[in-house]
Amino acid sequence: MEPTKYFDADVIVIGTSIATQTVIGQIKDSGLKILVLEGGDLEQNAFSQSLTFSDERGHFINHHWGGHWSRVYGGASRIWNGFSAPLEKWDLIGIDGRPTWPMTIDELEKYYRLSAPVMGEDPSIANLTKYNPTQYFLDRPYVIMDIPLSYSDPKLLTNNKNIELRLKHNVIKFTADESGSFINGIWYSVDGDVRFAGVKKNTRIVLGTGGLGNAQILLQPADNRQVPVGNESGLVGKTLMAHPHVPTGEAFVDTAVLKKPTWAKVKYKKWLPAYIIGADYKTKLNLLNASISLSLAADTELSPNEKAVKEFYEKKWGKKLSRQTLYARTEQLPNPENRIEITAEKNAAGLHKLVTYCVFGARDMMSIDTTVRLMADHFMKNKLGVMTIDNDSIFLKIWGWAHPSGVTRFGSNPKDSVCDSNGRVWSYQNLYINGSSLFPTVGYANPTWTIAALGMRLGDHLAKVVKKNA
Amino acid sequence: MPKMLNVSISRRSVLKLGVISSALLVLPLWGNRALAQSTPGATSKAAPEGLISFNAGWAIPLEDKSALLTLEQVKIKEAQANAPQSVGQNSTNPPASAKPVNKSWTDKAQEAWNKVKGFF
Image (tube, rainbow over all chains, first blue to last red; front, side, top):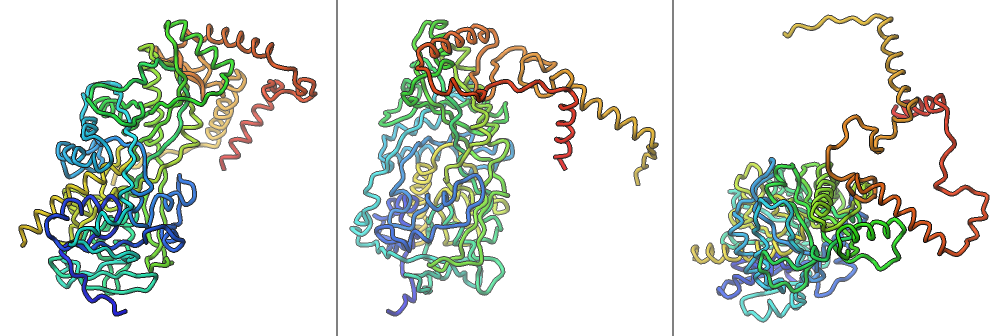
């Protein structure tokens, strides 16, 4: 078969996860010609699974990062479910030297609301974005989301005449024109057979191949220049972040603590009680954003120690207490030492493989410890509960949940970011990125809802830009 | 160029420093307090209020501690009374929680020195 000479489209979308399907959703009715390139097939196979293996170093069990990254139609969104909560203003505004988000919380909230149904949820869950920041402790639950499985059905795209889907097309890297301002070609492979196709100047490219995958493509060495195409900033692969997770202990609590919060007026479907420290106190106490959730403890016999504590406080406070397990999730401080790099070895699709370095820092763990201790103090003073604080678990048994973020972060200044506020790579007029790799800071909850919100926002932006140019 | 402070240390001063450092290292061990940081009262500055908690333990107000310990003893006795006699009770091996034999201060000093050596 003669390789394609040109990818002839108004928009080339790379990847089929929720990061790109939300972009397509906003532009599919605009009459634009859209070409979608997916590296995997309709189902996982040994070939596609081998593509996400990397040399993983840090606070993660082996193949943890690879296990959260899928080369299959629908991407990781297809297998994903999890505990979501929106980011808050405090996460975006550069507290304590952290990088800022190039957008306001109002704009993000608007897209949280729009994207909630995409996540199978009611738009009212966006009400959790804003709360009274002067509150010391706040019941801000997780929304337990199950993304509709329709994302694994390619008909969602192919039923549109203006959308062409090509499976098993693994993008390797881009080429740039002589001006250095436009992407003019794409190296890719099909079943390991490496090919090249040109890209026209007015074609927009949206890269959404996963939190690690986006950076992997922008780190591939170029044939005719020192700097890989897309990494002119030198920041691609830096400040890798995820979410430290750890069980922090057990508690006997007043069941009032477990009730649905009413302050946000949310129509919850599935949710999990959780507490955070209010924004003003987080700043004052120099904390990262951490959340402690409560779930019903396993029904095992209480030890004499547990029996004594339960009986003592039930008698003292005159109320029944429920036995719960406490679990902490926290943001990870952006740190350039946490990063991904490419190795000399290539994978079966022809991309240089990755090595990941991701280690938790003192503030990551101490933020969990302090948040738990403040929660213990708050519960005790208000006769809401008594809890254990397991030092060994927090500091020695902590582990991470691979929500790879930050490795192509967006910002307001090309000096300290890879992409502009719309996710466009600063150096190129026609290359955009969506995914958690854009996040300058990562909050404490799963990133998928925020990815979907940013995807819809990018889709709206592209619709405007392409229409304007036409 | 900034003026350098001209300081010389005599051999006598070095010896003095060594003796004082060794004494500082060993003295707390005599009082059996060097490793007792988590015991209430061991630190010179007690927290004025708030909760006390030990590793993996309950975060509780200090004033509740003695009553809780008393109640826990009751619960332990109840559990022992209800528990079937196990083979392990006839074992000659001491339980894991048995207190170690008291060590002399010289043993403790030697252990401390071994720890210091371990730093290098």
